[in-house]
Length: 300
Image (cartoon, rainbow, N blue to C red; front, side, top):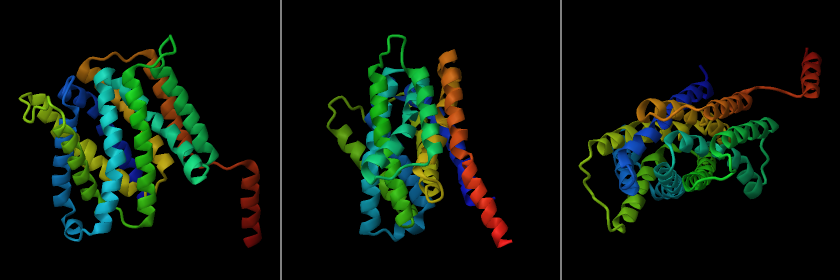
């Protein structure tokens, strides 16, 4: 099995963890303590990954620490805003709205780097955006505050994915993973420190169980796999693979939180799944196929 296919499968497994984490996070934080939850989540992830990548940790230098810290800024903003979104809307809706990252990445690349994505990526992004519209926009064509938080977080996350793609192509990105999560821990700790109502040791069991699940599976596992995968898969395709997340998220919210699976979720989810398939199709225009076949005939 080639590495690209392997990481594709590992990413899809990770999106299941991410999808479940929306419901787990909503249960864990209730209506408060999102910064503290993220702080402990990043801390545990950093500790676990420090053991796994101990060889890289021993060789840390200023460059890898700086790269990890720069990645942490957009990652913290993205996750924090989406965590806020969960407190104002349903877990299933939040997970679907977060998928708008897929549309933002090619647009940001076009505006900043003047780098146009392939036609099929735009078709997939448009299909995904249609699915998100079906799911999140109400009959009054309005979007709630929770969705606004989530969309803003998706923008920050799109920036993060583009940064990871750039860093992975510049060199080995594995040494930056532990510094990235350590920086995430520091940033969220400082933010929580300035909150007057922070309860540093919550008594709720769901809070700590949520931290364990999110730290190990949706943070340590998923972000490590996704960062390494972007050496073989573009940011646009990675973001579209992430659209499996809301599908898993909707079913997790149904079974864990008792949220309804509506026809809008099913239709929108179907469109998002179709977008994933479109992005992975290896297709050529007819004239391109003719040119390829002619070149093969000449070589023969």
